[in-house]
Image 1 (cartoon, rainbow, N blue to C red):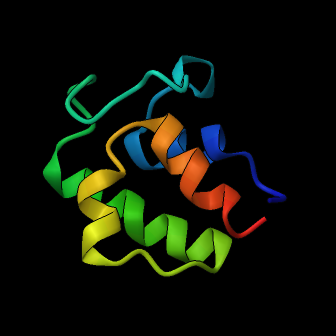
Image 2: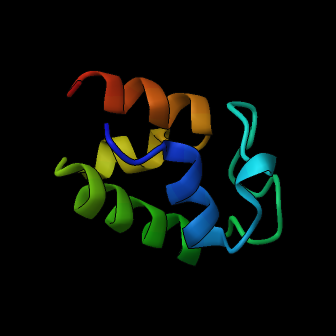
Image 3: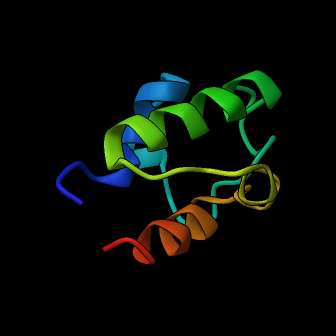
Length: 74
């Protein structure tokens, strides 16, 4: 992964990258709502060249879970 996950999350949610930790979760900040969750999944697909299916989308609700998901493709 050439682009840090923290940078991708920060870009989608318009928050500082320093505030993105593995513990950050869906609805943990006002910016991580359902619309931006979908936008994050699209950005992950574009940046990392992965496909996020419906099952994954429902389960990828923390930065830690997203990092583990992306680790399958590293």
